[in-house]
Amino acid sequence: MKIDGIDKKIIRSLIKDARIPILSIARDVGISGAAIHQRLRKLEKSELIDSYQMKINPKALGYTTVAFVGVFLETTAVLSSIIKRIKEIKEVVECHYTSGNFTIFIKVLCKDNEDLMLLLDTKIKIINGVSKFETFISLNQQIDRQIHI
Amino acid sequence: MKIDGIDKKIIRSLIKDARIPILSIARDVGISGAAIHQRLRKLEKSELIDSYQMKINPKALGYTTVAFVGVFLETTAVLSSIIKRIKEIKEVVECHYTSGNFTIFIKVLCKDNEDLMLLLDTKIKIINGVSKFETFISLNQQIDRQIHI
DNA sequence: CGTGAAACCCCGTAGAT
DNA sequence: ATCTACGGGGTTTCACG
Image (cartoon, rainbow over all chains, first blue to last red; front, side, top):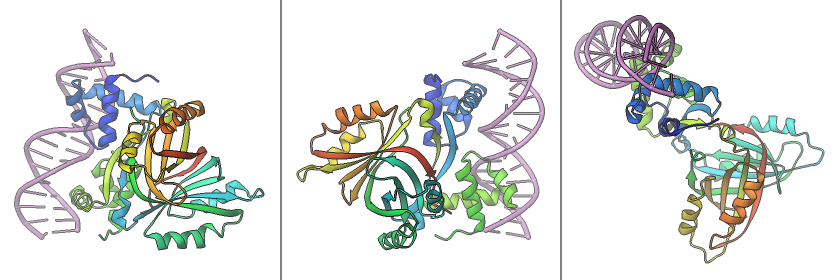
């Protein structure tokens, strides 16, 4: 998959604002709307474009606490059934199977620290196969971006 | 900030596909385009909507390794200057100031594990004030979603 | 890979309910 | 808060270079 300078400009525009009109990109770049359209179709088919998403601001919904939880599993634990249980926890936004100290690693959003404690206590701890976990609370997110194009 | 069922439908549509036409949402929901338009304006003003973003698939660019790095800082370290150095590393997509075991916690995307080793060795380790760090490689991401609406 | 034209569709606003 | 209507503009496809 090779992308040229024009593709990069299209991608950068749409990363900044996914709802920008193609014709507006076309004017910026200096080629016709039809050409941008054609390139976009190709980029979409190439799987370089995963999706176009509206991004919600969790703080506006009262979710002010971001935390990472490293989970240790018992050797007898069945991963797939644990993942299934974790998926049911709506506060979980990421879940990774990891090498390193932990077996799985999750990112959660909670309304406050008390809700986080409650979540750990009533939703994580009780999952069968979870032996222990370690929590890291994000006091401040300094960087949030996509891979550089 | 109170949102009703119609707002939720609008938000869910746009999380799934940020480029969907307002009129298409209108037909789904069963009210006019003008009404959807007005609701969207309100949602945007409320800061519930952070942005509309095209999401890139890093794998299509050859970035196959996802890792988290917990960094310990020396007590004398100046946070802001360290963050500044970290921002210059293009593979870093998230950076959090955390409570817990680590001082800062970052998420990185690399082409492969060798590139990750190189990054840790030549870009993280050498930052003034970094005393040590711990790496967790994501072997598989099982969940990637936004807060549930 | 690029173009412009044509047909179709959408957006944003205005004014009424 | 919703509607219809409208004018300006956007999207998509096409034949062609």
